[in-house]
Image (cartoon, rainbow, N blue to C red; front, side, top):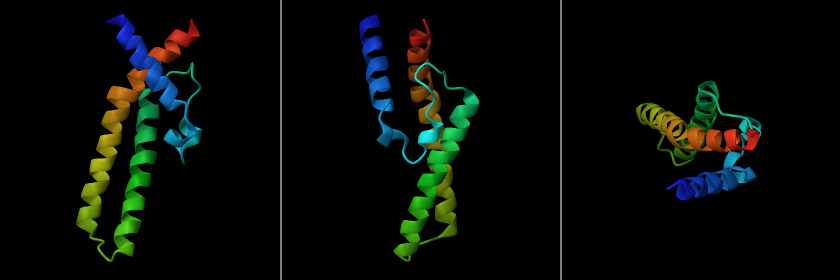
Length: 103
């Protein structure tokens, strides 16, 4: 079981090291041996969720289909989605690798 866990951590680390995953918020990517804090999860969620919301709002405006109620719902959904993903998947896997690299 430990082998599978290590492979998942390594794959996540390999993928998370790619620039395209963090674009356009590459400044948020911590060093490989630096753990991600809860505060960092909040900041990443705001940036990625907020950025996605803005992009979808622009698309809606260009298609003449912008509705404020829909945009608010979409924004809240995206913020929540990114927050849950970063908290449940990214943070634990990143931090496991960071702790391993610190040894």
